[in-house]
Length: 277
Image (cartoon, rainbow, N blue to C red; front, side, top):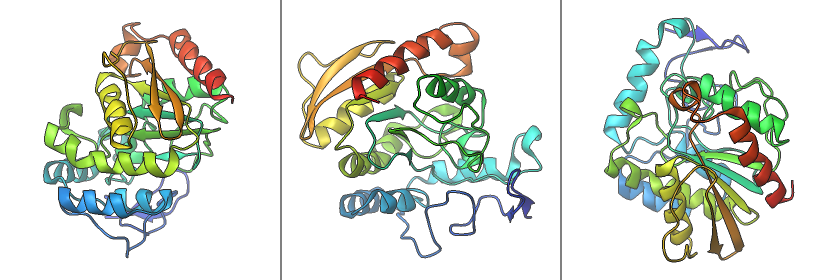
């Protein structure tokens, strides 16, 4: 059954077929599809542009458990979104093609990015995150409702270490490893100007360190430890980069006061200064 996009009014199946007109869809019906970890590694290594990585990420089917889950959620849906189509595919990175700041989180949410097609948007966590980015001058607005709402990032790119919404927000080690080459490719192609990586949570912190190492950089000894507000200088072929740790803006963290707007403002404000934005 086709349903209308909540903003554009165009109708789509759930999950959304590649190249069917969804706002921001980077793929076409002819985009190559990775069906295994080996294919992900080969395609990511061969990618020649950020656009190619985004397109191939958005149709990846290498992790059967994640494919089944994201597509089942797109059909069963949450009651409050029952009248909307769900993206139901992997979520590519988005934002500036040559960013100064990169924001790295764990994975999209089942009824957030898996619904909107844009990572970390469409739920209360996204509301919290993008309001802070707007206050820091890293986004043009705080509104982050869907992929056609006009949100744009200033010198900033947002990516996830795992591109599919995982059951219970918990990808397996094998799924994390399978997806890692996509992040490595994105860093290789878009990371030359990055001076700050804001890392949302402990797993994303480890993924950032692995990404830097995979590109021929070094992270020092002892290995830097994650913490909110923690910083670490890492060396990359393009120069020194500052990692800044930030608690993930999950509802558990924001509702309990573990993460407050002022704490986010401190992190994003510092990142903007360090990156020269």
